[in-house]
Image 1 (tube, rainbow, N blue to C red):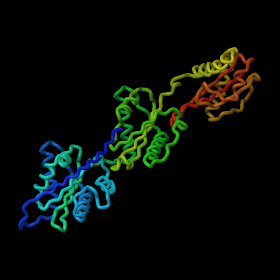
Image 2 (image 1 turned 90 degrees about the vertical axis):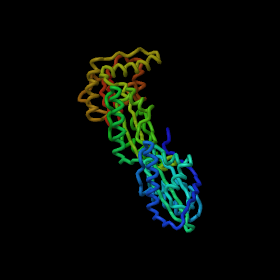
Image 3 (image 1 turned 45 degrees about the horizontal axis):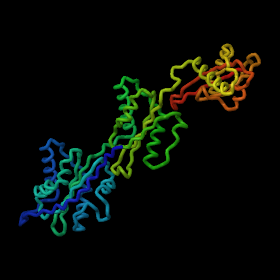
Length: 389
């Protein structure tokens, strides 16, 4: 996963000098304004976006200039040992990339100070970084009549509401499907909420919950990024045609690798059911083949499907599905036959206690009735199966 936070640790000892004589000192804010003008003049001359002035960044820059002035020391570290990255994060700002220029000068000439920055390759890179969009400049006059200057640059992070961010990623998924002539994936609240909980747990370091126990086969993707997007490998999987539904859950937090903040995205992709479009006759054949496979292993005579009893068994299974039950009170016993019903998520699987019945050497014919339903919330298919012996 590509990291988008770039901390440009550049220490420039931009000591400058110039004639001060008896010229009247301008007020601090005018020096800051002139420095901003010079920065944006350099950028616009190169067809780069001008930087927006940020009061929040200025507050951070001013505090650091005050700290340097009190120490009489040019540094990127505060007196408490915090880096400019720490100071930005502590201020509550969200960012993708940041940089900082510091200088000390015995002149108040903004053009002279700016020239010092531009003559240093590292500081020049900050001034002309095309990804930056905001700046805060703080100038402080020390007791020794020196100007301590801090320029804090940032590529600010646009923070969306969680619901809005999730909607954006869902729309991106829909766009990918449409571009590949595939139907849109369906998104359901239960799965979306589960995915959001996963992202929240990731942000806080909590252990994640078992996904399969809730939703069956699930392909899970975790993305950590301050910029909302879907990586190419996941886009390719979404466009593979393997899936019929999905879920998106997002949380926002600060991590060690992303002190400026990042989105934690969880995407669930639910494969198209292997039983998609099948009829009850198809399910009957699948169940009968599984039973006969077991009997073949034991060298027993293979079972034949009893069509008449299967019809009766189908009626029972439909009633079980309607009642959402695993047992049903029979209105009459079908010709004194044995009737057994069970629920399964796979028509090839039956309860272990039915093994003696299914592998009875004397058994020759069996009635099988199957009714099924797929949950829109959990994407798991349930089969109500009735056997008549």
